[in-house]
Length: 263
Ligand code: 13P
Image (cartoon, rainbow, N blue to C red; front, side):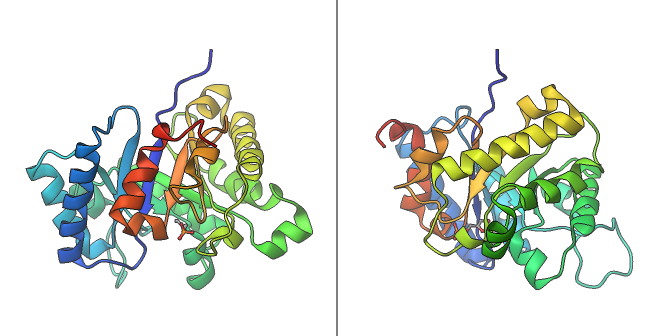
């Protein structure tokens, strides 16, 4: 008997929407999901705004008792001190963040975050009671040179070496070539890599951890292709970029159950 994993639809806003725009957006999203009678206990929905929006989003969610979750897009490996520009996991916890994205390919690429830094950030998130959403994924060159699973699995191994068996983490498989390109992986490609990632978790942390851990797919996810991904055994949700900035698209993605089976 497998463990039921609650699907997670996560919206990574990247560097879009200021704090005022975030309030309007979250209100509209909440209305759209309410009108559609979305069951948050069946499919969790979370938004990942820029740091400067988090207080506004937290306040709105708390005031209106919205069931949406929220998280940040990065955190520091440090807890406090002379680290100009850095944000502590303690500050994110204080803003009721449930999640924090770690090791997004844009951070790996533009900020030279190594697998070791990603592992340290994962440990920092767990230290502050946050659920890390650890991103892994191969470039087009990696795919050519090493095949689909080798690089994402190797990236995850470094994180798995640093965490305990009972750590609550989410893994996001985001092939770099699929991000923002309009060229999503096929559901079969996503399944193949997500299954390999789950096998790596089983090997390092045991079958229970592997059965419990949610593994998301990300990269050009839209309302028109989400059902294909969610039909896969090892895909437990999506990390959505561009389409998470459109209320109708994002709420349609969250309501994928209404179109699963239609592809
Ligand atoms: P897109 O959905 O825009 O391809 O971005 C995916 C992503 O990077 C989410 O973290």
